[in-house]
Image 1 (cartoon, rainbow, N blue to C red):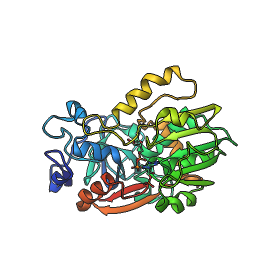
Image 2: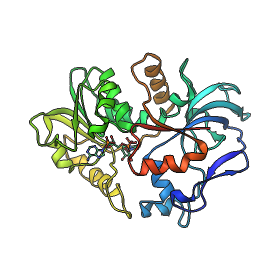
Image 3: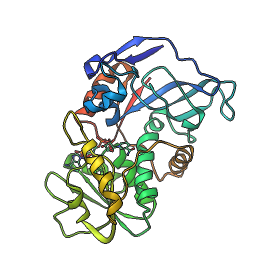
Length: 321
Ligand SMILES: NC(=O)c1ccc[n+]([C@@H]2O[C@H](COP(=O)([O-])OP(=O)(O)OC[C@H]3O[C@@H](n4cnc5c(N)ncnc54)[C@H](OP(=O)(O)O)[C@@H]3O)[C@@H](O)[C@H]2O)c1
């Protein structure tokens, strides 16, 4: 099968190759990938940065040589112990190494494609959609009428977060660069703040919930933009140096959150079957859609990855296979 493979770290190491098709075990599902989606987490893995993460990923090069996690496609084969899913089913979800013609995963990592949805609109749903669900609904517990600010509203997580908060009845302010303001308005944001000209922590407005996807301010400054009963949900951030990247920020939030009433826990969103079902239902009822900022054929994955590293593509990046 054709796959994007890398033997060493760095986007220049990504190349299209012919490799063996993975074989599903008894409890696995083999998916013919029709579209994959990549995001900043894939950029970290491809570049091997932050360096400290190489202890787990592989010191000299990535142990997992095919990038990608999100996908949509058609079930090709299932293991003998798999029930409830069959060859020919159209699905979306996650599988390691989704930038390839085929990928193997567990049945619980997949969900039936919402009716009428194309593979390219379904591939970006799982990781970013689940992360936004966790931040806005589960940790943030947003209620109708609350004022929610999404910092990094034009990104993969942010575009889902804006729509989910609106679907829950919130008034939503999205923070992004001016070039993406219209995009954020188009998905329902009531107000947009251009971070290049305005600092939301310095204005007089106070929010019930802030979902931070950008790490653009100190946690303390962001808590200062909350009402007394408000909550800051720190969802990583892209800042930091080559060695520790966003980890310093994450560890800082982990250390302080248990002692701060207005700061929620950090979290790692691993898409669960119920999350995938909830996302599929929201897509089916029209309240949420994946915003696709750019689409690339499989062979152009290195360029797609570079553009993610440069922050040049808004919302979700799709790879067609
Ligand atoms: N907790 C989890 O399990 C989990 C899962 C997935 C991702 N994440 C994390 O979530 C974060 C966001 O991911 P993503 O996929 O949404 O990233 P992304 O697509 O690269 O989006 C980044 C966003 O940040 C905005 N931004 C950049 N500089 C900013 C600034 N100074 N002030 C305000 N906004 C700024 C960008 O706006 P413009 O493009 O308009 O400049 C964009 O909206 C990342 O740190 C990622 O690691 C966490």
